[in-house]
Picture 1 (cartoon, rainbow, N blue to C red):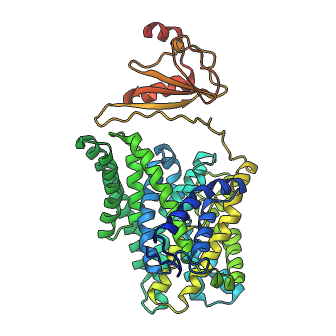
Picture 2: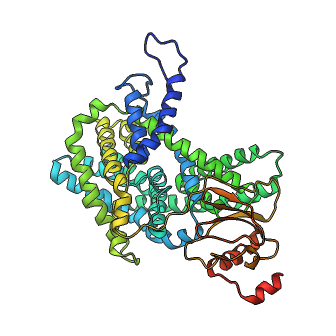
Picture 3: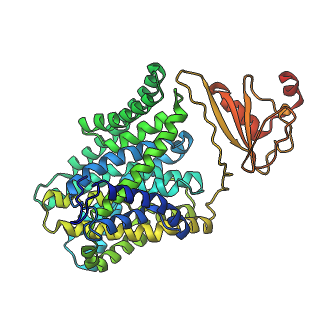
Length: 500
């Protein structure tokens, strides 16, 4: 990133960037209190520090911004896939995939046609605009849902859709640009290209997701730090291989993260924490950079078109696409309403909005400014009310108890064990039971109990209370049996006798 200082300053050119990142970090507390997504605050900070604001950090290169955005999105999507549970993907993948393909086309066409009719803009321009804005944003959705308590299947549908709808949006955008520039592609070629990108992306993701754990288990590296290097190489390898064979790199990265996240391998808990940190950093940098790229004075000149297009996509195009593309799956009306409202825009539409400028289309800045305005409105209206709507629709689940403690089992060799964190629900049959009464699988051990933010040393006569958090060392092969015991209260006398 190129940074230049105003005249009269002699500080290091990195000083303002450091201040910007620190402000962005602490601004998350302000965003939480105001009930707005953190991405809004990051974008605004970028605009304030940028060339059209205080002019402290100059950055106005859309091509470079596009390249940096791709790198940051690789890590965001990999971590998103890594944290997605297999059971949720199996339930939500098909409807999410339908929304990510058929839904994208319906959204783009609906928004393009309605914008043309209402605003009187050229039909090709509005269809291009619809293609750019059609995709939901993985960075925004993952960041927004990370600390939310949304019903798992519905949240997973939106997360998987946002991670897999980039191929359709990118191909639509490129196809419309080619059409405007007179490079017409046949419909058959369009669908063949789309299909190949999806199939190749999933295939490469599966390959990396299976090879990755094998490499971790066989590497036997000297220090834990090298495992962090290895996981970063898996991210780039997934994207790079897919790109070489003309597949979709973002989809490959998400699927690679998914398969690795649902596999057991050496140093996994350390890798999980590391990826969370990397994803948080990438989210902050992505939205700060896009904020720096914006000139607020230019955006305000398009506010009327921006407001109309934002309202059209939120209340017309997105609902039509969701209801049409989920018709074959059993979602309730309330769930579909939430899926409509969860189509939050973010960095990907802004990145796609640089395509017309890079391609040399006349008035390329028009698309960027309109899309940025739409993203701001989408994040403010939809992102700020997502919890409220989920509560009104009855889609909130009980919040997990908070603990200031985190216990981890970090090993550089194959241990075949993990440290399981289990929350004791208020209605659990474990309540008022003593530890020696629980028929744990052989070689399993409760290492610690967190109760009301205090650590309780576990002993045989320790009594379990509601809202306790148990840290249990268990072998991989016994994990399912352990969860069955804890969930179903398998405390019959025969098993107690066997354990004793």
